[in-house]
Length: 461
Image (cartoon, rainbow, N blue to C red; front, side, top):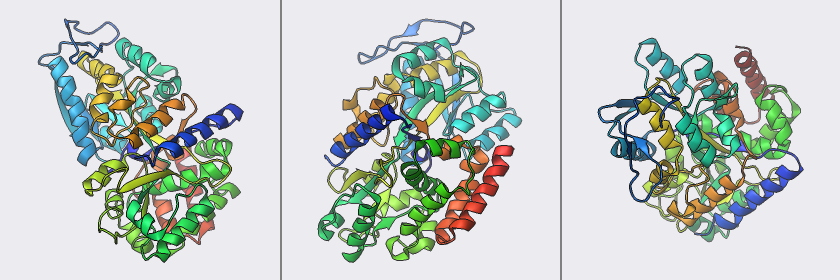
């Protein structure tokens, strides 16, 4: 499973932003453990009334067909199909979901070369959106979708899917990825407390270990999980300015700030007994399993905690556990002066110009579409006009309020800002280099050399 799920935004620096970051983290800390048509070349037609009191109107598209590609699998794919089904119901169009392989840009390249591109693709990286534009695959967003975007999204979210001042995408799904989920029974039995700082986190890890339960589950088979670990540590420890510069490769991965972050991360990764299955076991554990093994097994699960975003709630439910009761969550601990706030997003990009495709982008930019998935859980929307009461529990409501409340004070995570060859490809670049680091966490200098060599190659290309 991959997605927004794996990608990130973060608060920016400066005095005003620092206050906003504190407010966002504070909101999380208080709440988490509580329980369209185109630009004039369309066919026109009568607009269909939106049901159930919704205000959005869409054109009649009887007989029109669309293909939508995304890398989502499992519950994410099922819930997105419900969104597409609602679009079908309102317009009469027929929409087919196309399962895409990672990295999706390579998948799309093959489809386009074969003359059969999907109409719309859900792209999980800022770099992927830009690459689709640079390759002349992406079509600009139409007037109706732009109207919904202006109404429902902060400027920062709109800018993320714009290239050269032109809007090319609609961010539909987001994720707060600065969260650590824990098994409440394990914490109660161990007498463990929710930590606020990295040093307190390591103390909590030790407390859980002393109680007889392996403290942390890591889905190291999915390299994106490891990039998220690094990004949270680096953002909090090095600060937003260096984070920005590293994301642009304006400073090298051999920089002392990277050494410090890897050394800090090694305080956890270097303790084999603290990881479920040790490093070898973690590298064979995919993300969904890392969550499930934290919340199954009664009083003796394979781990007491797992790090990842709000979307973990879906996997917790699959483990027959209940968020707010069996599973609770705390913000990623502050390594430096402030706790990090990192999240991610998936943007809908049009690859084949059509009235139906533009209408789908318009729908995805509306609160109506977000509401369909939000009710199901495991979803976070950057749409500021989605009613928070739509989310199924107080935990998700507070996470959503914190994200939307950040306004424009965010950026996508470091790996998503990088070229895909470095920041978003299984078995290569940052993903592979951090998997190698998990195997040998004492070899910080070696990890830095690999990261810099691969980054230099990708950014140059």
